[in-house]
Length: 181
Image (cartoon, rainbow, N blue to C red; front, top):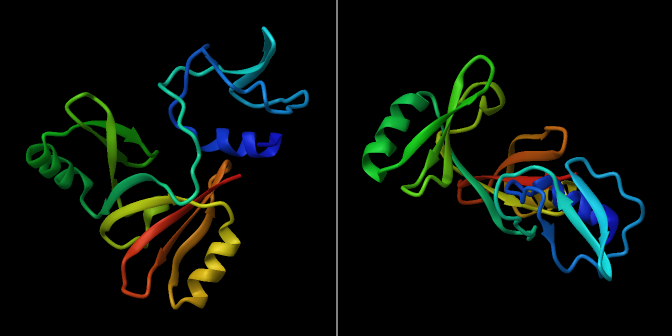
């Protein structure tokens, strides 16, 4: 893994250690890096990466992996109540500026999905459970999608540290591609 791959990987790590070292980074050849939210330090016989934000364990980036799931609908509040009752989920509010979306949590308090209004960045997204799949190259994936009779429904949209695009497969199922920068 080179420096750019490491920076890209950090862009999609949602859960992080707080001031704890990650082992086995000593094999990386990292120049004097300036990574937002992280610090590279020499400890013992090698280099280690300290992530400065505390939000849980580090997850490795795997291309082709489903990294998030959310439900996009007109009335997110109604469906938040439905899934809370049926699944036993609790929820927390996600402030989207002009409206609230919801993070749904399992009985242990782990966020497992989102329920979103089909407005703002989700405007034009069909009502569905949307999976987000981590990909390496947005342009290449979109070319292949079109060549294989899929459709680009929305995007790609640039959200600063990542790109996202909603596509439809030839059978009509929709999902989102996610590429960290």
